[in-house]
Image (cartoon, rainbow, N blue to C red; front, side, top):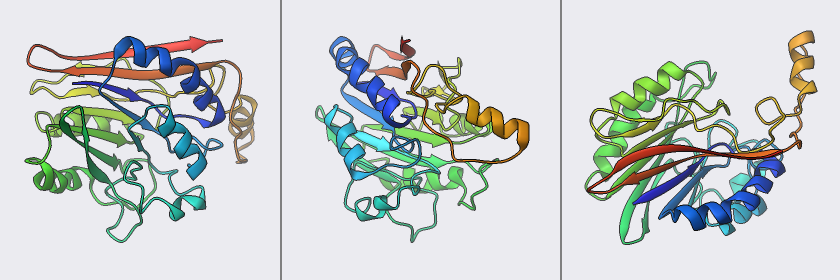
Length: 257
């Protein structure tokens, strides 16, 4: 199978990038299954039903998330019913939504797991490593492929997790930092891995936001709500191919300034 995995979609600019680049990318690469992280897709913080539907209409099969999943309170109205929207599985058991699901596409069953790191995240979550172990034991015999979005700040935590699940997960991709890393690789036991896919949003921005706002915060120490940047747009993604002859991961960056 061929998987197309898209990094954090940032607001309207990120959705604009998807509309512009995705049709041709799908035509060229012909992916069997598409995953995108959408926790910043509505105004840069959270996701709404309208934005969710817009992303799904573009051909995305599953939308993963992270710490901003709850920023738009509207999400509580549809996250329990919508199997194509995931939140981190290592939130406490009574939290709304689901942290993993099994999907069927092109005659194959694909498990997608959404997890969040704990280092520098400031959220009291269960251990993502042990949570993966529990989910893996539940679904290992029910899926043909297993994909993990590991939403985390610390590159060391992401890398450690990749090696921890090597040979059990087929793909582990990192999100959250919005900055793509150049360490895409197939790990020794066959897991396709990258520390961070990077953002889909504005070219001229600070992690997708208007440049002057975070600069002001760094200069003054005063926090203000950031606004989504609009200057240029880009799409960061990875292509993963897995079959009897090939186990490959490639980074793709498309830019329109």
